[in-house]
Amino acid sequence: MDLILWRHAEAMVERPDQDDLHRALTPKGERQAQRMAEWLNQRLAHSTRILVSPALRCQQTVAALGRAFKTVESLAPGGDVEAVLKAARWPESAEPVLVVGHQPTLGLVAAELLTGAALPWAVKKGAVWWLRNRDREGVAPVVLQAVQSPDCL
Image (cartoon, rainbow, N blue to C red; front, side, top):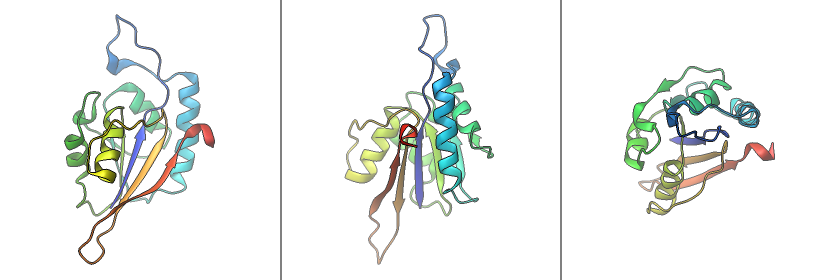
């Protein structure tokens, strides 16, 4: 199973009178989302399930892909590793899964799958971490396939 973690692109700074879920992307964030979407669209299988946080910045980030997606409430800011893995049906899902979400949750998911411990790893804004789990003779190691930042495209 492939699990692709995509952190939302750069968003506006939160204002005291604004709900965090309603923060939009900055112009730079819009460019980051577009660059990463182009990169992803060259690599994602057509069968990829796309799961997205209800936060506006995540919805705007994934919109650049131009693909159907499902909004999942448990992927909102403050979510946990277990919620992400359950939504993705890790590691049983038959198709690849792209999760568009937030820090620190995505970094914790990557660390948990790669090391067995929920360490506070940083995922840059707009970046993708691509993880793969392949069962080979009863052993199912998780491999880091790629890490891509929109600023390097």
